[in-house]
Length: 67
Image 1 (cartoon, rainbow, N blue to C red):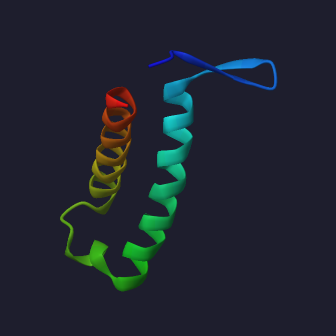
Image 2 (image 1 turned 180 degrees about the vertical axis):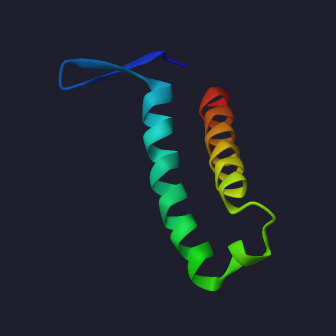
């Protein structure tokens, strides 16, 4: 797995791209979960959101590392 990727002459770490991708997925999923009312069942909605982002980011990182 390459550690860095060249984007128009800028060397960006792979994890930065994974972070941005998982942030986009998180925002879409967060809006969907808020719309259907899942957060009213969570004990601490902020903690639930952080945990959701951590799961998405770690899962994407492991998929990238395996490839």
